[in-house]
Image (cartoon, rainbow, N blue to C red; front, side, top):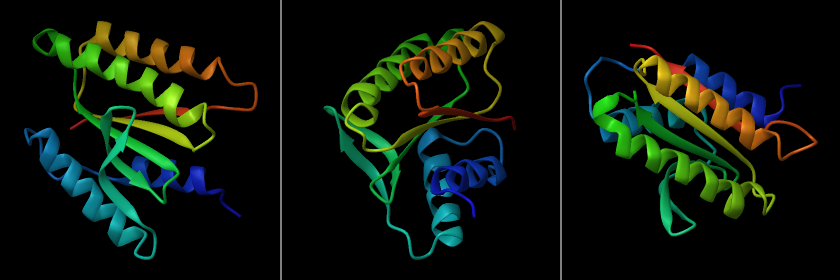
Length: 141
């Protein structure tokens, strides 16, 4: 039987953004609608308040989904904000044993940013003996 967290990851990997060039909010709404169609009886909340901020989506009060557009030199402040969000989620969600965090990036980030985000996710997971609590899903359009 598939574990809930494996189901969330599988669904995020299956999701295909409809078109390139949409806004982050449009992709978030598209993903929420798609997940709701796949999980009709499961609560999915948008803009869920966590640690003085808002997570894009939270499934069943246990799985945080943060969606970002690809990182480029023009989006350095957004990249730094994302790293800060992941740390806040670590402290206020994962460390409180609330659940797992999924970072979904739509589009292909510049290689230096991709390398840094992969290392950041790996580093966050080093804090936990029992498994990975942070997952990275890249959706190349």
